[in-house]
Image (cartoon, rainbow, N blue to C red):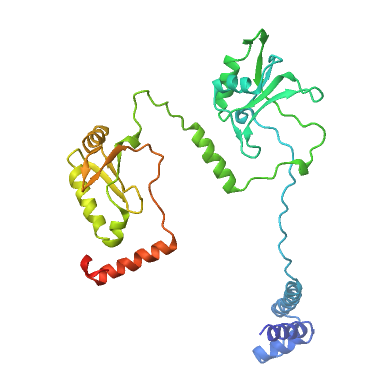
Length: 344
């Protein structure tokens, strides 16, 4: 189709460029020879010539467009890393001068932490705290750097520590300035962190900022609402009769509900000590349960009752062989219709 259009356009251009063509075309249209002195004919012929020029230009421009090849899009180059100055409102580092010569890093940390939470360098695995020392002797030079998490800590350090005295040495605190020494070398720049590492670091800092008051001396831990009852069963009993687990659970719920509202009962059926934990709504309910059941006989067994310490685990994981054997016995139990007497 493109080729036919191009041929037609070229033929039309060639015909219109012939001076005799307008006369011939006029006679074909109107059936008479044109009067070349007629002004209307001259205007009509001039239009024919302008069409010839326009068609030629259009054909040439079309060829130019077709001859052009699309260049592949160029990739934007990443800008070269350069040194940048940190703005004052985002600067959370302070420079301290006039420190005693015998100051230690722990003492410096204790003093600076009174004004806020010190930032942590997760790459170097240490606090962003530094005492400048002499490279030859290793002795402190009396100045240091501290980076906080919050900008407000900088203002507080400049109010509380600046112009204060430590062992006769007057200290000065000012906003830290970081200046480039020599030429900037991009190779020495730290590798930028990916989004996952940045998110993890923000989460850790958020935990540091999530300040909570210390527990009061008479305040009880929530784990003390859970009572640990031991020596209530023999795990082998459940191998013989799996339905016994639900029976024991029902008995314990009936017994323990006498002492308060039960939130949860867990039977650790693989634990050799025969452990069951009961979680109550209130501390007093758990205390009443312990005082009532501790050293009491239950199903021919002497029960031991105590508060859970919040750390000890009672779940016993079974091996693949033990799991297969338990499932086999469970299948046998179901096939027997739950009749223990039919089992060997």
